[in-house]
Length: 281
Ligand SMILES: [Fe+2]
Image (cartoon, rainbow, N blue to C red; front, side, top):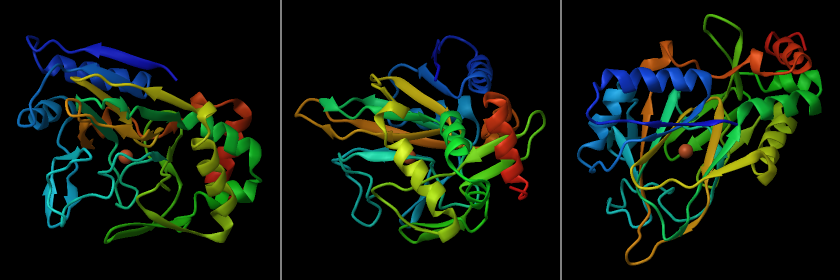
C-alpha cells in the first residue's frame, strides 16, 4: 500500500489543496496531509474546506462535525463514546451502522500519545484478493447479501451487506463495509459467516497491517470502503495526551471513488468477485 504525503501550504489558495487531495486519493487510497498546527476551533472548517461538507456524527443527543478521540474525554457520560479509551480497536470500515457510510475519513492528530496509539491500515484490495482465493463462490456471494450481518453501535442498528458493488463510471468497483471491533456488536447471517470470519482473521493479522505513527499537525485521509483502519492501544503521560479528531466526508464522492477498483485485482480474483457480485457464483 502506497501512502502519499502532501504538504499543504496555508499561503496557497485553498481550492488547490482540495484538488490535490481528491487527485491523490483517486490514485492511492491513503494520504497523510501535513496541515500544521490547527486548534480545536479551526480544524473543522479547515477540513471542510479541503474535503467538502461533512457527514454528521450522531453522538448522544446531538450531531457534530468532528468527533474528539481521547482517553480523558471531557464529554459527559451521556455522549461519551465507548471508543474513547486507550484500548486497541481492530480494523474496520467507519459508519457501517448507517445506511450511507462516509466516502472519506479524516483523522487529524492534535497530539500523539506518550507511547503507542499508531493507526493501523489494511489494504482492501489484498483482502478481496485473499477472499476470492479462500472462499467458495456461494460463500463469496453471501457477503454481497443485503442481510449479511447486523451491526449495532449504541442505539444505531442496521442489517447490511459486507461487499457492495459501487455505482460509478469506469471499471467496476467493490466496496468493503466490514466492521467487527471491540466497541460494537454484530450478528452474522449463517451463509456469510465463513467470509466474515475470514475478513476478521486477515484484518487482525499483522502481516496484512501497516502501522502509521502520526505527528501533531498531520492528518490521515483515506477512502473508507477501500482501506480498513484501526489503532493500537496507547499510554498517555502528564505531558503527552493523545488527542485525535475524526471527520467523515461524502461530498467529494463524484471525485473520490468508493471501493476497490476491479483493475486493482488479478484477473482471476476480478472474475470470481464480479461473478459473485452478480449473484451467479
Ligand atoms: Fe474508525
